[in-house]
Image (cartoon, rainbow, N blue to C red; front, side, top):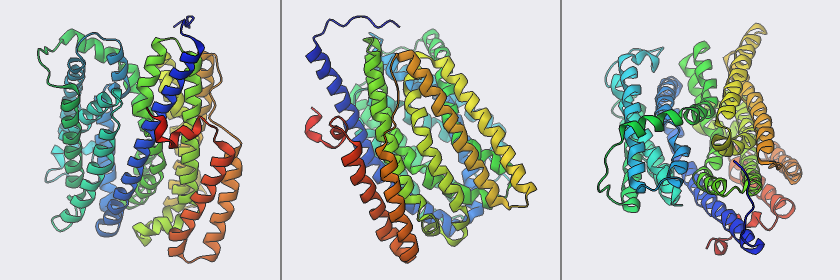
Length: 503
């Protein structure tokens, strides 16, 4: 794609660029509020699942949904990000394009569900199949359908629907249902609660989709176009699956070597550590449409600036949350139950992995449009690095006589190193393509981290465990945030917090 001269006056170009930053800030701010809501709802689920169902049942649940969500990820065929590109280039009614996407995803979901229904041992490798276990893959339709519907809404800058579906309805449904179903079945309660939450999220996605896009009057499926759409999105779908799989491969490999109880402990650590990852996804729905529009206009250097800006926001936010959760880590894991404290080391390494990954994921948000095949190769290389290092650390810790919880920390360390590799290589590739530096790093992050770490260390040394959480976490976040605000944020960054700039 060539970067042609733009006849628009400089003041109008600056106004357009400012509007893009404002849109990114507004979308990120809205979804950040959703992150806080999701956090408030996810903690009760972890508490209920950890203390009442126990590590073994939680480990069985974790492995089953790992497979289900991988299948759903593949069934979206890359349309979570690819749909924005399709909508920006078509003259057809947008609701027709969205329905084409939902249809082709439903066909892929049917294929994935059929495979898992026929081979349920893939979901439950270490336990017997009974009850409704075999039919759990039907929920793939709900997950994939909801993802595509929310992507369509995000194209019209409707981020509130994503917050409502993913941060309120989905997590609160699974938390409430898990608590109620404990009295029905401690073996199947978590799986049924998960299915109910995904069905509720689908309903919460489809209703606003119809309100926004209207009814599909005159729509006719286009089989050849659907096949072509699926073919075009194979690299995008594979890249999505690779990025998603990098956060699940550790659990899958660990499950081969350790008991379901250890898998359950690691799952809790993973769920807590994944909370900062939701900060990254706060910008995903709005970043795609902004990038695709700027690509159509050839604004490559503007894209580099926007990616660097969002990258800094994500790194800064993830680092602050990671410090607040990792420093009083034993107290955080102890909230779920005393059996889970042994997973503190793994949780800390997973939190580091999320911070390291920020550069890779924001770079990929552009690479999937301008270099999708090279991006896919880098993603696959990252998975290969992660797999090799995971097996190496597991065998090394076993050889040195360390137990399964150290092996769990080993796979978390492997993930951190693999994501560092991905961040470096993808940022370099994107910088070369855009002809401008892509870098979300600022030195204020070092000063903020150092001071917050000292505050956190003091809290763990001189405060009781309840105070580490009630006083220590706010203190860490407060000090860190003040330093980032005064030493790291410029005028453009502060748009993230100014509603009057949204327009």
